[in-house]
Amino acid sequence: MDQPIPEQAAAALASYDAPLVFALPKGRILKELKPLLTRAGIVPDADFEDEDSRSLRFATNHAGLDVVRVRPFDVATFVAHGGAQIGVCGGDVLMEFDYPELYAPLDLRLGACRVSVAEPRELAGRDDPSTWSAVTVATKYPGIATRHFAARGIQAQVVHLNGAMELAPSLGLSRLIVDLVQTGSTLKANGLVETEVIAPVTSRLVVNRTALKTRPEEIGAWIARFREALEA
Image (cartoon, rainbow, N blue to C red; front, side):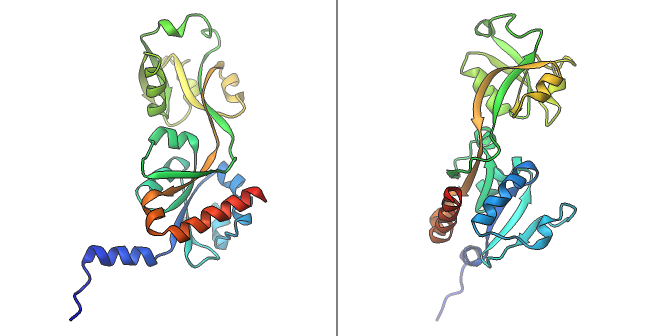
């Protein structure tokens, strides 16, 4: 007599039969990403293009693939925790969270920018950072900032902000900021200068390591498609 499938095993089978979920970042990167998605053969439902749509999950022209539209900072978390099996996120997000569950097989060469240290123009070069024991830093990257300064023997006292970092020094919240920089025009407009580049940043294709082991053919095929789309 057949034994009933245990609840966990049934859930695993249902998960295997379900469409793969591809997490895409909202905003500027998504606009740059759309031509690459097209070359990879992914066409989301029409309402995906409607920025006023309240829907967050969309079917595509592939029965086995859905896409979700989430905040750029959340893509890595969705993929690392298995809510999505594939995603696109910036190298800055990968550095900040450093999830061991993520594998980043492809640099998509999109959204090129850098994570940098900046400080007020009038303070830049006034003293030697190698003499500091501690410094206050405003940033949305507490992990990156803490590790960066710790490697130089400096304790970073982090003021965690999600935006408007450039205001922090002038309002007395911090001496420095660590932020994502593309052109540097926002820094300049707020009296700051870039004093150190921590790391260059581009967008990466990321996959969940467990999903890659359990669904290697499906996920491997999508990695191959994106590799071909990059070379096209």
